[in-house]
Length: 352
Image (cartoon, rainbow, N blue to C red; front, side, top):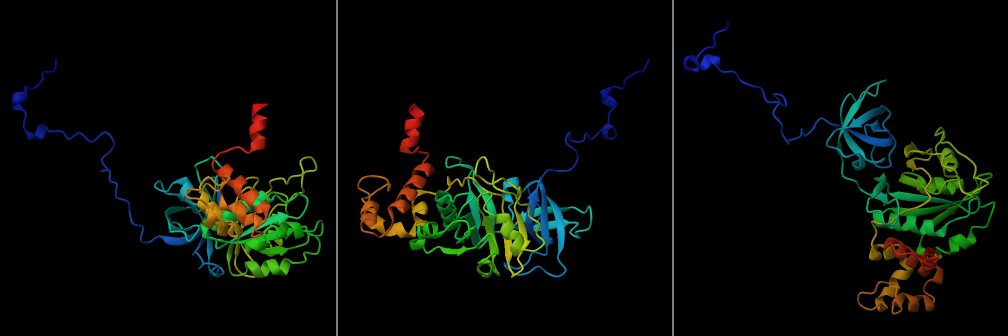
């Protein structure tokens, strides 16, 4: 039989310190400053792994001859949506770039620009397509597949909203005359280049327009975007495919954005093909800013004009020959889409 000691005989030697349930390390909200972080440039993102060029080159400048490619993972305090291709980031840990090495991404530097889009016009979640680009190259085909002017309008508005210079490149001009498409933007002040699918006539003009800049290359699938990138960046090896004979649309070949060096200098960010360009983050006045040929007509608008009503001054502006009716129609279609309003024809179909 074990006899228990009376509590009256206890002293300080009998004290026992019970460790906290969650460990002995005190919790703190203070995060390390990571002053020793090495600057890197995010060149592609794939399943939680961030491929970075270290050190990060100056904007539009060639990479350092001793630059290495480093694979990194995010620190816990960095949100997944907080990092995009083109971001300049801070890296700690193993930044040697050797096989199987892994660094940690601990900081995202302030961006000079961010090209954004949403899944659709009612989705409040913005997605950064490319960070820190100073030019957007929108690639469309003159034919096969047929050009979609409304997609062009949307991409241009997104570029204007981001403060990025737009450039329109029309491919396959040996299959169809691009004059009508280019004429729709004649009053817009939009720079454009036309190239052929055979012989690549006009390719030197594209090289000159992209030289020394960081350009986001976007466009629908099947327009020859990846083929064009392979010509501009030898060794890029971007996958290509033909347009579907059933749907008349391109097949997705590029699945992730990637930064590529250009032979003429500068960098191109090749992005996956797009079939929609949501503008939920763009308001009416911002949207109008993307239509420079219409902006002057708002001076005669009544107070609080929605730009989609009978008294709107834009109708008189178009009637006076300052802009084409197609441009006004395109603007108002975008405006209704951003507001989540269906087109009249769509309303009729919904009732059936």
